[in-house]
Image (tube, rainbow, N blue to C red; front, side, top):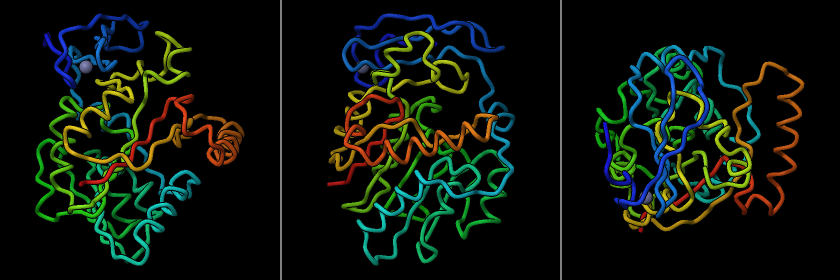
Length: 272
Ligand SMILES: [Zn+2]
């Protein structure tokens, strides 16, 4: 596929970068928009469904995460005692759903079968096992809250999906997204070796500007925005994971998270 326009802002002004060889899928040629700084690579010929089933065999039960607990506390404060209807897109093994209050009405979407089964076992969420592009979530909506952590960079057409999510929210409903920020200090310092350019499953590389561009077109109001090192602890060393969690706890309580120093970008927005 050869795109003549930025898939986010439709600008014709873009150039290309070539991150180093990453895996069996070969060379990556990533297009970078000069207007919204979005990056994209839609030339990959990867069977994404197979890729996710092979790469997301997280069969362990969901466990406590300080980062997800902190988000849960924020959402509980925001909604007070309201019985919230939430859907988590790309719900994995229920790693976020597991933290949420038991009286909330919970849904998830997860196409990788093993994590989906685990989340059904350990949470009270109903899990839809169809890709977000092929399923109408409105059957169970509209929703007070839609969350999606580290998913939109995997989608072929994230704009259509985000448009659909915004449409599935109640008035005043909130959309909480997390993805990589290629314009963060860490990503800029890493250059072509930025870790998020590597996985074959990443097709889009957002900037703060490109993600806000989509949200603004959907008349969403940004209500919270922060950056950190991410809550995905997937290193082999338990000690390293513990150290990272500890660092995150300290870092996340400082105002530094309001600046895009680290590369995991969280943007919460509300439907007007
Ligand atoms: Zn653009």
